[in-house]
Image 1 (cartoon, one colour):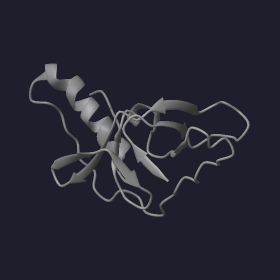
Image 2: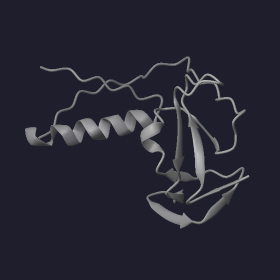
Image 3: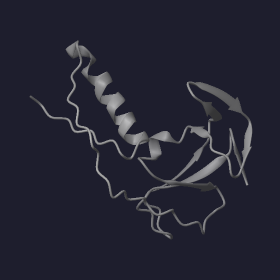
Image 4: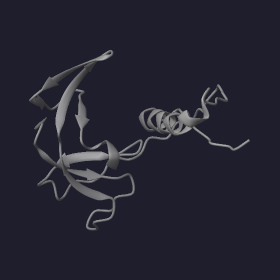
Length: 125
């Protein structure tokens, strides 16, 4: 198969049960990008077996999910991976300017979403 900008896809969440519509979203992929370090190269279509970034689906996937084509009604979601190790470093942080707290929280959410080994805890002090 291939994936590309403008393709409709089914996004299955980690708790998706076949036959039910819970944790199922049908969305259009806005862009496909090849990520090389801090640079992105926009590409039209990508064949199966390649690793790419998909723009337009990120708000529906938290840590794990399965993406299939729109007609993949019999597709099952992939099992969530569990790691036997726990984070080894604990860091406390706060913004220099208190008005930047929402930006810091949003950045930490994105970091936790992209890396399954990162745990973010917000505590008021």
